[in-house]
Length: 183
Image 1 (cartoon, one colour):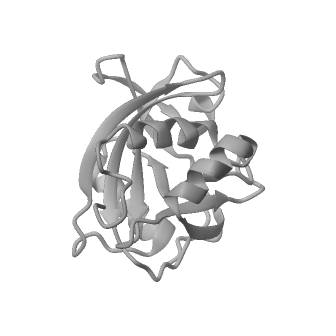
Image 2 (image 1 turned 90 degrees about the vertical axis):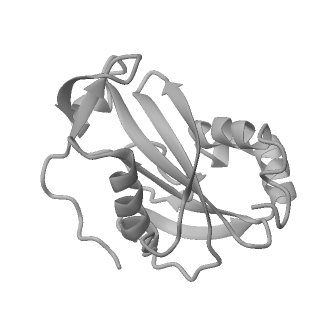
């Protein structure tokens, strides 16, 4: 299931440091103004054997083009809950219908940089594929062995988004999470 390209302006809820709603702004306003804190979701997808699925962002993306990133990531639309956005993004980006799979809440993380400020809710899902990825936003998806992923991050970090590198570090801190068959 591949979604059509976005043609309408997307609006996001703006939140304060406590996560309380304080307004709305367009995607364009949020990407370029780090004072506009908005909410996103990520879904870490693991194969039953413990490998991690990553998506490669298309070269024409407005942020971090051509870099490997978390399997699923997306903004909450204005008025949307984290769980609603998680289900929508799994369908849109990977063709996965989470009404049957049960993603688990992992943690919340804050990202602050010169481009944007996001409060990210991170979920995990064990799913072997196949995937029908959203070709308008993603150029490739691939499962990575954790050891190989760790080595590649250490040796060639520029092929990954900075947010993914930080998130991967947080995932490694969860005892047993990235161990084979413990996913």
